[in-house]
Image (tube, rainbow, N blue to C red; front, side, top):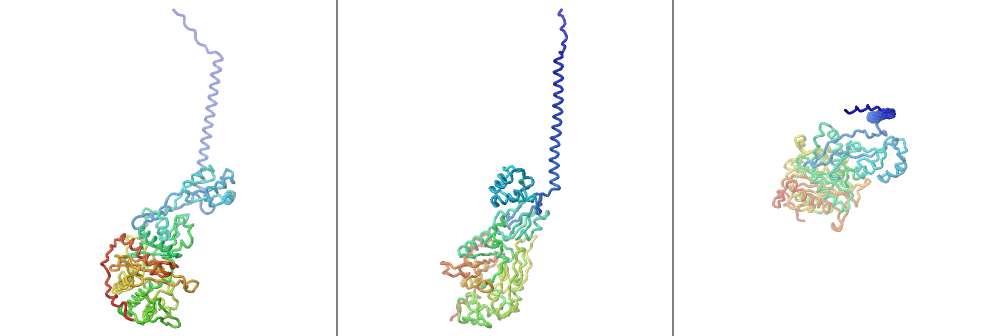
Length: 567
């Protein structure tokens, strides 16, 4: 048999080694636990600090800070659903000077390099001043945000906040308006419908405007071209549905980009179409004739008036650009835009009836449409006989182009005056009932008279083949420092189409156009704004479903026999 193996007995040295290992492991375990506890404590401290800042630290300099609430506004769309205004999440760059840990002078140099709208000294003053929080840039581009973030400075804050975006840029800017940096409506529809746009219950439903982006673009392009061609200082235009009062386009030039409204000039922010008031000259003459017809003063377009070269009214005289020097018919007075003839019709009508008609048409006060930018009419205080005569041909009374558009709509739609609206007509916004200001018979007869002005008179260049345009030119000397200038004018054309079945009114205006070689030096409306009407109507009529038809015309038999009277 084999002898049993002897038992293994641990040596003292081996037992000592095992004990040491156990002590080392215990120490390591203890240190690990302490580390975990410290790490957890740090995390807890950070979380508590973030919570504290979120609840108690407004991070502000007295004018709002990174926690400032900016409401997410509802969209604004045109009549076809095209987005005109939308709220987006934009980057904001801010600085909290007390939290800057790097060299402030170096940081100021870096910020001036990346955002040169301020210089190094300005940034250094911000970093060393008393303010706890300062916005550096709102609506910052992603490239700038990335570059600033690469600086690695904890005192710089990069946050997202709601911001208003106008994807069509300057298109219809004076209708849409714009907001301030805190999201409050400042102008246009943004201001008019501020409560609607921020109301949580309605935010899901966009605000539908009556504007058509396509029609707006056509009007703007034609007006801008004329403004440049004739070196005008400004321009305005309105296109309106004469039956519903819907404003399909409204342009004021120079234009404003609402995305950077603060960078626009005061002139660009000014709405010439609805806020500016002007003496719009001979465009008023059709109103005088229509008033006189409704009052029974004018029995027909063949009624004759003496038309001398000068008409004496009190101690002043009235003259014509192309004087007749003979008796002339009402049709001829309109065809040649005679001040002398129109003044006599107005004086026959009388101040009281003239003023009452204009008041019913809304010409003596603000119009009352939705835009907050509304001009107040300027008119004679005492309304003398001379005032009656001059108001009859569009002087001594200053109105907005929007007033004029609403007036022509009433003149040609059957005689009903309605307030213009920038909201799309529908179940939630029905057509206004309106007020009768002219008889249907007078409204019908005026179609032929205004069509004749375009085919035979001063508005020939406004005609758009096949679309039966009717209307009236107006050229008025501009009132500067209380005196009429002999060298500056406001030129206007107010028209309606198609004249055999009127549907749309168009008013265009140029402020201080200059004569050119092409116009033989003339700066009157027939030469510069009438072509704008022709070009615009030719572009927009197909969009509006108006088919060209050169065989259709309003009945001109009531007008043409009374033209070209013998000397």
